[in-house]
Image (cartoon, rainbow, N blue to C red):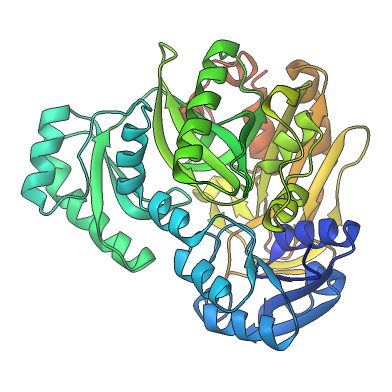
Length: 461
């Protein structure tokens, strides 16, 4: 095992990584921006180094600054967390070239699977089911429109380098296609520096299901079950749970087997997530691979009893996986709600500010992953995620009740700060969610029925 880990991230995931490193006796160095010099992760790490100003492109997205700091401070490994540089194959390659263990898949694997068009082609070779769509990237709007007309509307235009729900546009009418095609390319260029896009059929009514995969350097690959991530707004996840409710066990097993097959063909090492859509007839279709730890990894930890960050560190150090596929046992039901500093009554507008009151929930089988504290400042420079509330129970009904109780207990407020807490209570109280009949359109379905507009919670149970 390496001895010192540079954590190239911020917020709750930086603190999460540091905690597991401490349990393993590993020294941690936190690379932080000037905005995070007094963060919870900075206070917890063994050493800190400021790598730039608040702007992410000059700090957390600056490979040279991170690698230089790691080498100067004596780190021998780098954990990128999620987001930022976690799926940047150039960063992974630079780390490796400088003798630093990159805690993630090999750069070549990230490059192949991070390109959504290449990943789609590779999935086809691996025998995974795909939605109708273009083969590779599209050279022109005329070519793209011809593909859309061939596969039928609605379609979704996707940036090859997209991620986190960004760089995607749903088109329902042929007359809108060319305008949205051009707009999506511009957005992709601005966000990712890559304007390449492809087109595939869009399912209006679908479940978003993902499979957690782990591989080691000895050719072993396993899956750790599946998660339902169907509760979304603007294709960004709000609630996740494991196991996916209402899906046949046989279907989940086939998705797991398909994911392992493709991961093994790709030479996958470390933690990864294979994402799928599932239609009303329980048919699943490959979407993409996320070559990193996920925001929602705690629900898998809760039902399997595994520490996925610990497994990441162990695999990166060259050790074999700690379990075989036949050892996997999924117990009970786990839910995660993402608490964002956003105002649901104002189209989820971010609400940065100084936190004056913070009290996380407690009680049996309740976990809170957060970097918040009274006196912390929520800055507009980064993602608005401020906490993740995770619960476990023997069955889904008890898990929902426990989550509602935990959200009720959560206190997080400040000057101008609002959160999605009450909105999430509405979501898990909704009959479609309770009956596991929900899909990716749930949030939009809730709005006409009376989404809260005055800060009061609407009880729809």
